[in-house]
Length: 234
Image (cartoon, rainbow, N blue to C red):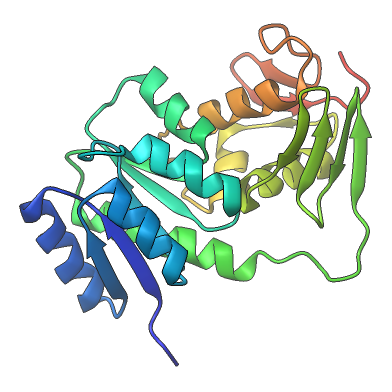
């Protein structure tokens, strides 16, 4: 069996050497580039199972690399590495199409767990072939099998992670889902993990599907308990 091929886009040599060494020790094949231009060229010529992408890069930055990649490939997992911990910066990266992020400095153990978790989910999460799954709510129509959403804002190609979140909400329509339940079902992480990724993805869902994201009627926050999806609108 061929080793899983990961593209690492990181311009800091010391960080890159450590990540490459540890990924290879785990049995992964790693290609390393140092700029956004090199990353786009590599992605265009080689198949990768995961892109580990630093946000701050010379030339084309990581955010723009992510945006360009998502125009042509919505399913290739992207793990963002960023020195910026502000919530607005994290939201911007996730809205650009990143699946998850780590804020520097981070532990190698957490990094490897995130990598393995993303790869595991992208491997086992496959819809049943031939199964029609179309959901309509508000002015939105979503084909979960084709991973396409038709909204008043236009047609949106959904990532695997976005589809997992939507499936979870649709399956539990009307129920309050705790943060722990969503973290476990969508990201496969421990329910006691503290992460803003979930909240940022709710922001993304509202931007996609709510007429007024600031006053949602479908993806609702239940204060102190979690989130709830309402098909007919609150």
